[in-house]
Image 1: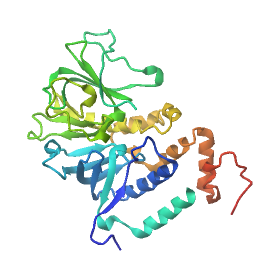
Image 2: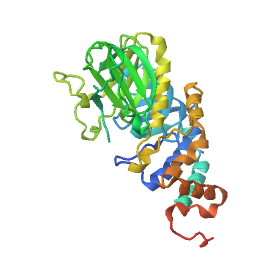
Image 3: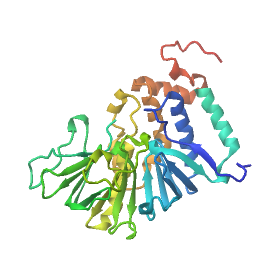
Image 4: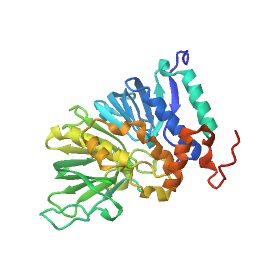
Length: 121
Length: 230
């Protein structure tokens, strides 16, 4: 089971408004535990300033701050200076999307987790 | 929210160049001092070696030679930081940071490329810190990570007063670099604080853990808990 051949994208970070809504905070915890399982996998983190960075997920914390290793910038022509950073810390609040490896998407697990979130909310 | 880079001029009088005056009254503490660091703002030329001060709240750089020259940026505004060692990207190994100026919404043309005649600090989106000794970069990187975690997005005003430092032990362990802060044993703190009243929130949280029936207790603070709807 997976998301066909496409890369799954999950929204991370908070919206444009200030602070998390209550629902968003629940969602944040869901993403946190979910992303933790992806440590060691290759992901692409898209920031709100349109910068997209691909790298190995080193760690994620409860604020969805993300550490990447062996990073590279997807649009290298636009961001040449970011070419070569080895590891990178990205503040959770500036993340727009995290693109996941297709086989990193466990539908069963997500169903279960979202059901639990819905009950709790 | 405090956004972007600012001038920093409040120095104490001790020593030749002084040290930054921190807001210790509200719990700000100095985490790290690194001497012999140049700073590069946007595409501007490097500024004379100075000293880098990392506190629990902000990054401060003070010129060693000019007491009126210094910059600061809150960790809240540091979107991203990374160690850059590629000479093609930048001459010297440096800590590269992106700064959230707070007005990214208007998608204005990037200001650090051309119109740098007048320096508008609040519009600077990139900052490089270049230590004379590149071996210090990993240490600086790790302290940046630690401080970023000490400064999550403020959720409600009053919650900002919690300092997010859970114990001195954790602080020490984090400096040692083995990432205990990623441990999920700290998750409940986030949820607990959401309620404003910490004691109440944490007891509610325990109930949630032990008994699924209380899962939505958080939403109905004044409700009698005798009213189980199971």
